[in-house]
Structure formats: C-alpha cells, structure tokens
Length: 223
Image (cartoon, rainbow, N blue to C red; front, side, top):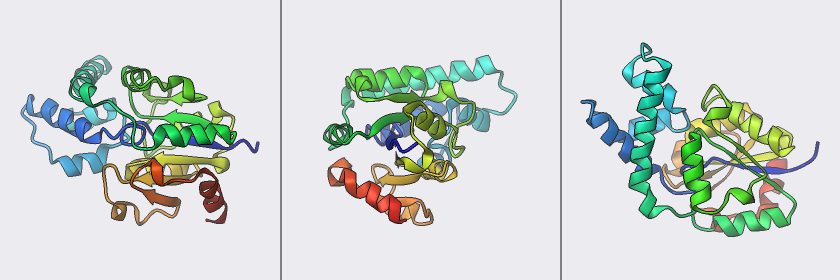
C-alpha cells in the first residue's frame, strides 16, 4: 500500500485554539475548587480524552455517566469561549488544497468528542476536504497511545510509514512515533524546544504557510 496521507490533529493544529481549551479547563476546575497550573496541565493532558482527564483530576471512582456529563459541560464551555474566534490556522486551507492536488489523502485524528469535531469542521466548512476522520468516540485510549492515528491511516487507505502527522503537543508526537509515523510540529502552543527529544519530527514550523508538500515526503524518506 503506497497511498500517502497527511493526518492532522485538530485542536492546536487545524485551528490555533489551545489557549481557549486551557482557559475553559481552568474555568471548569475553578468552579469546582481546583487550582491547576496551565502549562503543566497542557503538557500532561493535550491529546488525552476527556474521560481520561476527568479520571485523573476527580478520581477513578467517577462513573462513566458522571464523567461524560462533566466532559460535556467542559466542552460546551470551550465552544462558547472559542466560537467568536473560530478560524483555520494560517496557510492551512492552501496547504491542503495543494496536498489534494498531489493525490495525498487527508485525515483528521483527534481526541475531541464528536460535538467538537462538528463545531470545528462544519463551522469552517472543512469536513468535505477530508477522506477520513477519527475522534474520541472511535478509540478507547487517547494519545500518547497510537490508536487514533492508526485508525485514521487505515480509513484513509494509507500505510503508517507513508503517513505524516501534524501535531502541536508532545503526547501527540509520541503517539505518532508509536504508530510508526513521522511528524510535523506546529509551534502554535509550545516552543520548538519542547519537541527536541523526538526522533520522528521532520519539521517544526509556525504555521502551514512555511510548508512544501513534496519536501515533507522527501524529508520523511531520508529520516
């Protein structure tokens, strides 16, 4: 299977929104009397699913229903905060247009629930651009487990070795590494130094305007 694919994390990658996710988490926790360090929280949780984060901060005694209710409340708060600012990351639309013209399959692999996927992709009218979408509802484990990337590649008809992941978080880059995929890092949320230990990173950029489709696969083949 030689089909090539680009697999995009959604939050912090397709949209530059992670500051709003962190703000909504901090507000959510504050309402319950929890004080959380923003930087530490992001580094430890970005890419993990909502039920995993709830379990970490509220205890494993939470029932599935209780966790789902808390997660729904938090994500509704996030969508309310971010809705006035919803926009694709600089250069993204042009980049995927060039990728599709080159015959590359496009996929989304995110830890987000379906409501957030709908909010982002339908809100930006981008759903039609993707050949495959995999989210939190499709896999049991969040990143750094590779499940969502592997599923996205499978749905796009591409082998992991021929797939390049676009990420903004260390847990996501680690998930790509475990999936046998190279990664492009966007510094929308963290500086380049946060990713210096990863041997699967082929490029670190500010946004999509700096990327060349053909050069990415050439870099992937030589790393």
